[in-house]
Length: 337
Ligand code: CA
Image 1 (cartoon, helix red, strand yellow):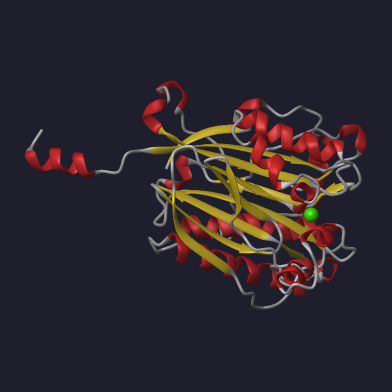
Image 2 (cartoon, rainbow, N blue to C red):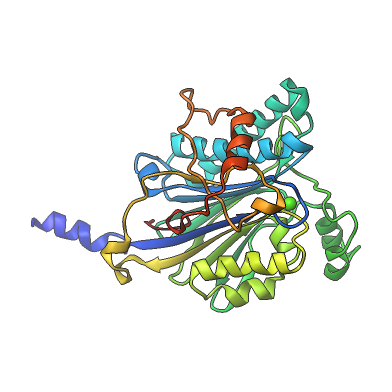
């Protein structure tokens, strides 16, 4: 090995890896899961300029078809635009991806009467090398648990959250407020949207990130989310969903949990790349067929490369027909950052 090659090796950043788990559940009251979530695979990231692991959660609203369509579009367009971005700057790539997703959802809503008025929250987190960035609109949340402390990184763009910030409501009053679901910002409702973009934050080994829809954080408190964050990720994610269900799960429940680990601490046999995308599809799920998590692989991207809208009908059929329990292998993946 030449001297220059040795020097290059010596200054390279130690490899970090992220364990990622995704769970979604329609809940006990709603007939349809209008949440959507996804994360990128190492294979997808390989050719991407901004790079890093991208995790996205979206919580749709607006009628039967609208909410599910909006959250799916947000997730797919953000993912596609981020991976295809020409910039190497994750913050710029995230902002551009959410901007385009907003425009896309808005234009679909304008051109289709069934979808008019649809909108969605979107929270997207990038974990890259030893740093993190996020982009956020709405009231889904990103938490970080570090050193036994939990911090909500995102700010809720909801009416009650702004009233709390202005001192008009206490946090406790906000939790049970009849208008707690009213959003001040959401994706797709207007031609333009104000997007919170933050970062870079440093990453530390042991950090746990939790992305979730309000179906989780509305019924499972921060202290409880923190309490289970040091469990194995499958167990933590299952516990979060279980707690929500025990409390009546009035809304769809979706959670992504990611833990930062040192790659060298993990056996090579666990480092297999994922051969497929994993995306939560909106589904029609009745009580009898409800399962804790259904994560079918995302279909091949449309040829136009812009996260195109797939027809809703086949997905609904697929959702109804899918009686297979999820394969555990679909739910847990390890990636280098
Ligand atoms: Ca919700």
